[in-house]
Image 1 (tube, rainbow, N blue to C red):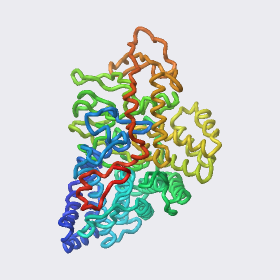
Image 2 (image 1 turned 90 degrees about the horizontal axis):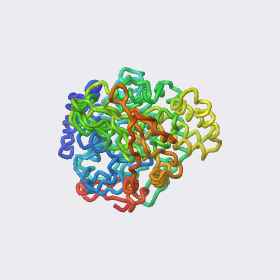
Image 3 (image 1 turned 180 degrees about the horizontal axis):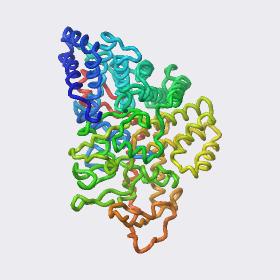
Amino acid sequence: MKNKILVFAIIISSLLISCNDDYLDSETLSTLDESVIFSTPGLAEGAVNGIKIPFGETNSYRGRYLPWYGMNTDIEWYNSSESTSNDNATLCNYNTLPNNTQMNTSNNAWDKMYQGIDRANVCIRGLRTYGNPTPGSELGYLLGEALTLRAVYYADLLKTWGDVPARFEPINSETLYIPKSSRDIIYKQIIQDLGEASELIPWPNGSATTSIVERVNKAFVKGLRARLALAASGYQQYPDGVRRSNDQELSVQNMYTLALNECRSIINSGTAMLEPSFEGLWRKYNEENIQAGGESLWEIPFSAGRGRMLFTFAIRHTNKDQHQSSGNNRGGQAGPLPIVFYDYDESDDRRDVTCVPYLYGSATNLFAKQELSALNKWYFGKFRYEWMTRDVTSSNDDGVNKIYMRYAEILLMAAETANELEGPSAAAPYLKQIRMRAFDPSLHATKVDAYVNALGSKPAMFDAIVEEHKYEFTGEMERKQALIRWNLLSTKLSEAKNKMFDLQQRAGDYFNVPSTLYYKYAADNETLIIYGLNRNETTDPGPDYTPYQWDNLNDSKITSLYSTATDPDNRQFWPIWQVFLDGSNGTLTNDYGY
């Protein structure tokens, strides 16, 4: 379905949205159109597919939201966080303002998310009114998909801005300007909606529609419901401070019970699973294998000429080369903090997939070699042009989807909630599954069984889950919301700064990290062979290797992780951009001191 956000979907959704122009005064035409569209499965599918169109628009998820939300954390950062020449860095270092030049446009992600929500509202109303959306029917699936996509947009609004306007009916002249609503109300509604959707949508591969991960399936719906339950009950910044919700319906007991039940339902279904190897998971992703039933539960679908996941996050390519023909300076906008590589167990298979110390240098005759980067600038190895099976020729876009949720998160949420409700012994099997893939079977007795079995208390198990989340998800921009709901954002960011200063000085836990690397090239004259990345690798390996200094982590780079004038816990959310405040007829304002 790589090229199938279809013209048909655009035409159908444009027809519906056009009925909403001029404050939706053309009600008679709208009613007539909807009665035909939403009682006809093929037409209704085009309308529901239209809900996805805002994901790929220029200043929406494609070019603004996905490239910027989620940095900087204790594991990942914008590789130019120290920059003062533009507003990019302030989006990441907890110092952005409502007039941010990257975001303060009327067609930005805020607007596009609400456009997606309104398209979903039209579809939900139409399917309920004119269809017969029952479990197992085409129209039933489409209602479930519309409810789920609306929940996705709201989930991202809530984690990015906190309290936002609640719109659960198509916009009209009377509801054009509305104030922010309590996020608790929205969380409760979308959690309820996902409960309904899960009854309407088949499991992965339970139908032709759910055979690919570009269409939602029951495992994803239940997983998203679990994620939202944990977010709703977790710590977060409210106008009166960082706290949990005061709404008893969103208590830890209620929401963790819901999340655990949903995660166990997914696990017991056997319809999704971890990929056998961590590298295999990410090769499959970059190869754009969208078959359902594996680890990816749902992906934001981009056509081949839209989406910037690799353009933003891939290993850096200096020029057009043997792996991509799209242009110069591709990838490398963000990377793991330099401490992350050294925090991994050296035998953890995830380390070398996730943390890459090289880029592709200047090309000669469209051929480039890997070249060492710098201690202060690593790259994410989960995203690689060199693992794609098609060339990327578009000027800025690569078309690779965004994995919105994968099965590893289900296991970690199950571990977290089981630990809270039932104790560490109930959490252990889920954590063991994650670690079994990370380590060679010959190491399972020590790195899996002994390690997990020693976590005999709830606090010890929780701390281990926080660490495992780090090793599993670096580079996927899932960490920020997790740290917020754990009430660890400021604490972990401060720890990360201190650890980077230790790495800079080769002190503390980093006393044995080498300051000199040695490299040579493999027989293909492209691939680096590196000695000195591991701790204690300090002996010169011989004349075949070239030395390379690995010590340029300076104070200004370290302190750029977050603004020294700001406590990250006072800036957990972005401000609403000024253009939307100005266009709200006075109904919207910013909180949190903006």
